[in-house]
Length: 186
Image (cartoon, rainbow, N blue to C red; front, top):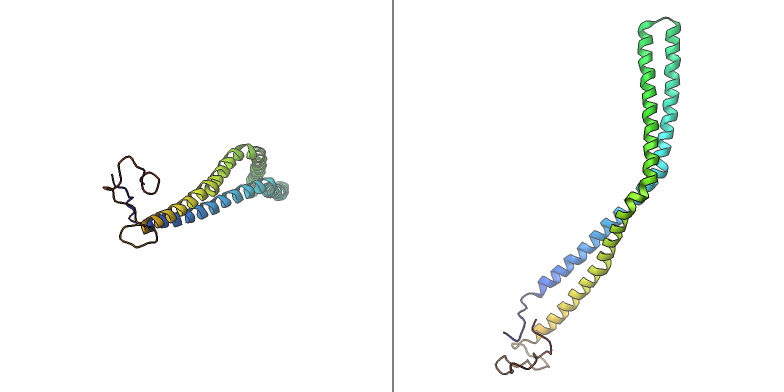
């Protein structure tokens, strides 16, 4: 077994470290967007959608009243063809109001259930955020230290001159003695 590690490319480790940093930043931005979407959706369910459907119901109620007046006028004038068209318009307006009322009920139901359904997923997003910031942060630091250590180790090669003497060759080191750097072979 050789007494020295065979390090062929520190650039590959540095490149991986740089890509890991980029990944960490991009993933963090994606998680920020997800968190923002959760908040926006909650606000949308709390205020925007109920207000929208209330306005729709108000508008459709006025439309129904107008259609009923047209039907009443058509019935008074004994116009059977226009009376039939007006009846269909009144039915259509009533269906639209029922649909809008159903939408507002659905919106209120989703608002009540939102936290129960979204909170467990939000916790998973926060766990992932912790992994990105903490664990990948440690990995980046570890890769940085590994690059420094390997760079220093590569400078100790027998072909370069340095202030510290190069370690003895494998033939001159007894088998039971520790490796020259005091650690196991890497």
